[in-house]
Image (cartoon, rainbow, N blue to C red; front, top):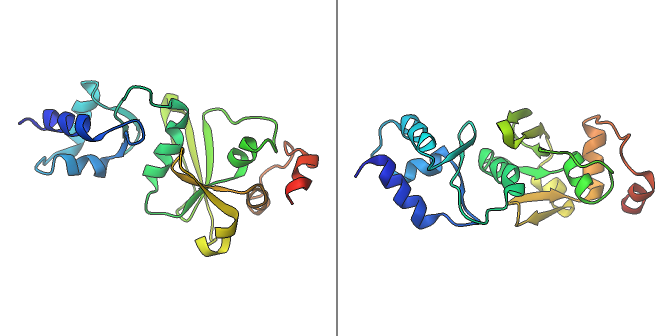
Amino acid sequence: MQPVRQLAETLRTLADREHCVFAASDLAAAVPNCGQLPVLLSRAVKAGLLHRICKGVYLYPVRDYPMGDLLYHAAARLRATEFNYLSLESALSDEGVISQIPMNWISLMSSGRSHIVNCGDYGHIEFIHTAQRPDDVAGELTYDARRHLWRASVRQALRDMKATRRSLELVNEEVMHEFV
């Protein structure tokens, strides 16, 4: 069987609404005898089987996929081996502590290096390095199952804003004092 067809059948069988964003390494397991994975993935994108989100991360389009969660799912796949959590403006905006909503941009604290990942038309994922260990902030994090990521509390997000010297101009002081 041709590798693209083998990949298509595997994805058709395994992918669903909750699991349709894949790292290249995930897709390699679907076609173990393929010697040229980058060529196979390029062909799969050209054939419309996959959509490239950013380098090394692909979307298998399924019906009813919540496209608003795509950057979050991509971030979870990009740094699956690192300690990451949603924080900074992304977490504060979701809780109504800042009035503006970052459009097509999410910010995460990460044990990996700081880096901004360009996801083309989908937006940007900003990873900010933190030396904090999971044990240090565990009490301030909750798991967001919809987005497949840990999320900082407002208190932790504000600490992260100060630690990274981000502007606090957009922070609603009245709402902030409720959480601190």
